[in-house]
Image 1: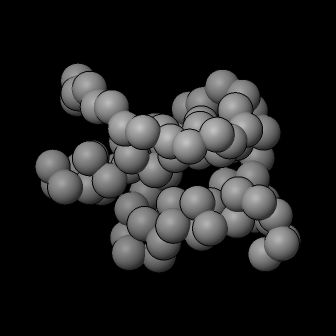
Image 2: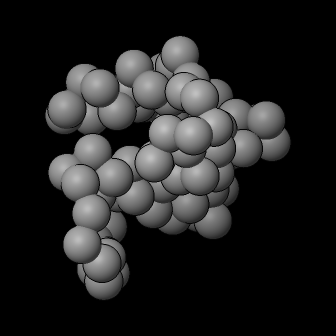
Image 3: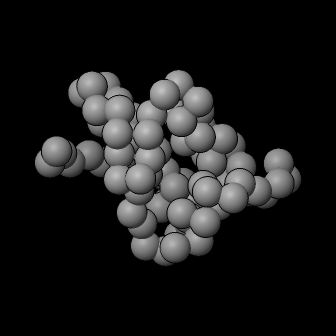
Length: 78
């Protein structure tokens, strides 16, 4: 799938921007009917947080939680 998007994100960390990009790509794929997704990212910390999770006090917890909700809805991440 080739797609492009743009959004306005207030001042935040590079990690938060990467997680927002992952979330946006997952949402676009989900809307187009794709349920199996390849999870690739740079920096690797983003993938680590998605795989291992993080404490609820982590600044990126809300984004990570929204991404992981797709897995609970049946999305498969590889």
